[in-house]
Amino acid sequence: MGTFCSVIKFENLQELKRLCHWGPIIALGVIAICSTMAMIDSVLWYWPLHTTGGSVNFIMLINWTVMILYNYFNAMFVGPGFVPLGWKPENSQDTMYLQYCKVCQAYKAPRSHHCRKCNRCVMKMDHHCPWINNCCGYQNHASFTLFLLLAPLGCIHAAFIFVMTMYTQLYNRMKIVLRNKTSIESWIEEKAKDRIQYYQLDEVFVFPYDMGSRWKNFKQVFTWSGVPEGDGLEWPIREGCHQYSLTIEQLKQKADKRVRSVRYKVIEDYSGACCPLNKGIKTFFTSPCTEEPRIQLQKGEFILATRGLRYWLYGDKILDDSFIEGVSRIRGWFPRNCVEKCPCDAETDQAPEGEKKNR
Image (cartoon, rainbow, N blue to C red):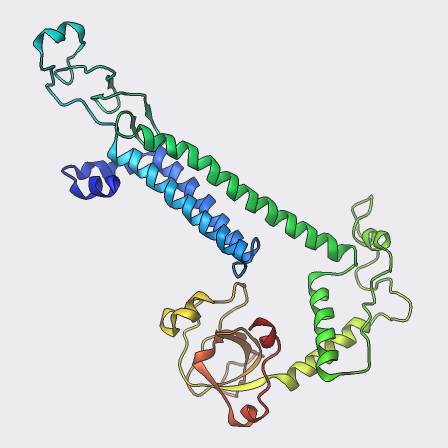
């Protein structure tokens, strides 16, 4: 509260100039970068926000940032407190024990010292700190010390999140390497199981490139020379499979996607914004965390949706002859509340692939 009052009272708005210095610029830049990256990491990777631990983790990150900034600005703007200009002790005989400051035209009170940077006598002066562009002294000693305590604790928390994020990524990466897969191939295998279960088929999908041995799979990626084995076009396969087992499964999935996709009609224009404010608070805050594009929608257009989240859908525009020549497809994410199911598809009531998983 002291910071807030000192900023608004501003008998001296000049205090804001303290921000225009290399110290506060670097300090606030580091705080902003570390806090932002830690929050983004905690949202995307570690921990999931929908868990209790993830929620507590995220709240703690915000708490560190707020407390660090509060004490930082308190130390900067409240300041150390200065000996009044022209000050002298009530008992004039006490002047014999005090030093006289010619710049401030006043006696130096006990524990006070003149700061050349501030050009004032500072009460209980500790030092002039370039990071807050002010002195540390009587009024801001506690705030400055708390800032120095909280900043490392916040950094330790952020570092823990960064380390766990990298560990999680490394763990997931090694898991698929030891099975001789890529991330995309893992996703294809998962969709294969979903397709077989959905249609209750009497078949089993066997991933063709898993050699059955972790060591053999490991050697497919890592070699002493650093050059991967093979030519990148043909691969060693396990018994009972052939070179095109995976691509055959992909073709089945593409055909299945066309069957299970749902036709929607656009009932409201959408600009293609990543986080549209005019489509509702829930739509704004649940925008998909992906680099996949958003697509512009105009009322009356038709979309084939192939997958979705609770408030977003992903699909292809149904193009007509009026579209630019050479554009084969336009696909991406768009808000659910901009479209409605076409009557013919509403009867079948099939949800886009992936929707039931995300709800």
